[in-house]
Structures are given as C-alpha cells and as structure tokens.
Amino acid sequence: MTAPFRDITPAERARSTSFYEASARTRLELLLDAGSFVEFIGPEQREISPHLNIFDLPEQFDDGIVVGHGRLDGAPVFVAAQEGRFMGGAFGEVHGAKLTGLLRAAREIGRIPVLILFDTGGVRLQEANAGELAIAEIMRAVMEARAAGVKVIGLIGGRSGCYGGGGLIAGCCSALAVSEPGRIAVSGPEVIETNRGVEEFDSRDRALVWRTMGGKHRRLLGAADVFAHDNVQDFREAALALLDLVGPFGLERLKAEQERLADRLRRYGACLDAVDIWTAEGIAHAETVPELPADQFIALADRIGRTSRDAR
Amino acid sequence: MEDFSFQHNVRARAGGTRQTAIVGVVASGNLEVLVERVLPDAECALDIKTAALGFGEVWRAVIGDFVERYSPGGLRFSINDGGARPDTVSLRLAQAVRLIAENGQ
Image (cartoon, rainbow over all chains, first blue to last red; front, side, top):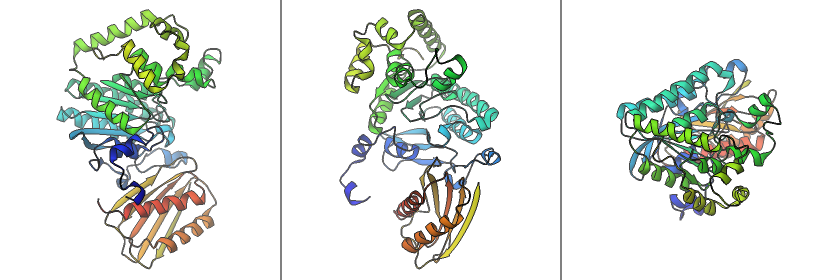
C-alpha cells in the first residue's frame, strides 16, 4: 500500500468506502476478511459472453460478475458480486451460470453461507432467452441451497439497484440488507411508464422512484431485514448480523412467508403511494421519511419492527 | 468493434511477483485492463478490443508513451475498451502496472 494508506486499518478503509460507488471487486475485497478472497473462474480464464460479439458489443473478461470464496469474521463464505457498470449488471448466459454454479457448490457442501451482492437491471436483453433461463436456474439453485441448510443473504446498494430477474432472485433469499440508494423491484421505472403510461408512473420523478422502490421503503415493508449505511463496512456488519438471525428453512417458514405477504396485501393493497403505507404503519409525519438521516431512519424502522425474521 | 495488437521491446522487467491483475470496468468512457506476467523480460504486448472505431493512431501514441514511461517487461495487457478517452487509458494502464508490481498472488 502507498504511504497515505499505511496507517489505515481494513475496517477504516471499508467504513470510508461508499458501497454505491465501489466496483464489484473493491466491494468484495473490503467486505471480506483482508486478503481472504479467492476467485473462481477469474478474468484470466476469459469466460466471456458468447453473444455480445454477434451484436458488435464489448465484452468483459469476468462477464460482469465476480464469484469465489473467502472469510467473514474468520468463517468461510461463498460470495458473488455483480458489476453494475458493465451492461447495467445484467444477467447473461455466462454471468448467470457462474452464480448458478456457486449456489450448487454451496448446496453440495450444505453449511457454508452465500452472500450475493446484487447490482443489476435484470436480464441482458441481447441474451434474452439464455438470460431468462439463467434467472430460473438461479432461483431454483437458491431454493435448493436453502433447503440443504445454506443461508443465502442478499446485499443491495449498487447503482443499478436490483431489478428484473434480480428482484425475483432477491425475493428467494433468506434475508436482505439494503441501503438508501439501493432499489429493489421487478419492473423498473421506465418499464412501468412505457407499459402503463406516465399517469401510472412518472419515471423522471426521482422522489417517486425512491419512495416506491428505494431502500427505506423496502425496509419499512419488511422486504429487507436490515438498513445499512452506504459504506462497505456497514454492509459487512449487516451480513454478519443477518447470518446470526436467519433460522432454519422449511415448509413452515414458507407458509409463514405466504401469510406475511397475504397480510401485507390486506393492509396496504389499497394504498396509492408509499407515504400512505407508512402512515398506515403508524408512522407520524410519514411524508418526512425520505429526508430522515440514516441513523434516525434505522431507529424508526426498528421501532416499527416489521421484519420478516419469522418468515421468508 | 476494432482490434489492435502492439508488441514492444523494453528496457527492463516489470517489478513485483504477482502473476495477474485486473483494473477498470467495461462501461461507456471506461475500460478494463487485464495484465499477465507471461512474456520474456525484455518484451511486452498489448491486445486491444475497442468499441470506438478509427482511433488506431491515438492508441499507438498512448501505448508508445506508456511503454516508454513504465518499461512493463514480461507483461501481456489485454484491454476491453468501452470508448475511454486517452487520459483514462493511460491511467488504467498505470494502475495495472502498479497492481501487478505488488507482491502476492
């Protein structure tokens, strides 16, 4: 390391590094115990997309996802991190296969948890069918890994958010941590506007996008279990906390999840805006939630207590 | 897409013991540089795939300047470019040499 960094501990570096701004590789380096990351199918193996060349589009040597294993507070973990700046972190054939393979390895071993650092707009449209199949394979692989006793934790705070098939996979995870700039949904703002009209959803209304899909709303709805500050150290601590919290997976838990979602629909199905939901949840001055600093928001979210700890 | 390959003879071997390193991301105005220590000490090679057509002479100048300044002997650089400006290319090449010059894997 260079002189200015010599006296900085890894934790301090992780605390001062924005998760949103960092690359997939930097996120993994700072999330895991220092020097513990070992990559599977690294860029030097050049497992690139077989489709992009046909469209005269640039390739990336890791196809936009970094997978491997490392240690978190001394304990082994499998990790996957999407690079949201390469084609919006979208799932192509190779990209998806790397995550499927990682999850199947975790299923075979049966104990070592998996952390997925989502940063994706969904399926890479140039690889449409292969990408859609990859989403289905990954969802199955997540559920098979969980059924084999593996905890699968999603961390969401990247510039591309977690959209499309990524949102579906996130819904299959044991637990999620999200930061304010992280967004979780299936159809993105532009997709909704294109299909249903600007009266339904104005994709240029940033405040609307964030209060509908952003990290604060997902935390208050119970879709995400932990709200993290936008730095890598906070996501590391969130991952450790979630690994502690997640209980065993089975039919009872799935039934509890179904009940949680049905209850949510009953309570809030008629709400027209996220502010209406927050008001219905009993939050005074709900319209101020988007402006709350992270610390105050975390205190509020913990008081509301709507987490999915008993379900999922 | 357009491809370029450059071979240079260099003064000295690049420092460090790492065998591979990677920097950057393939995005608009950005590029990734994969560097591998696979050549004889007095040689270096660069393979470029770029989305921006017609900039062969600019690449030649940027690469020539880089090789002269850093003498990256023994290194093969593989570049996927999303249309980065010359200053960004120079920066990523310098970062790649710096990273592989660290000790470790």
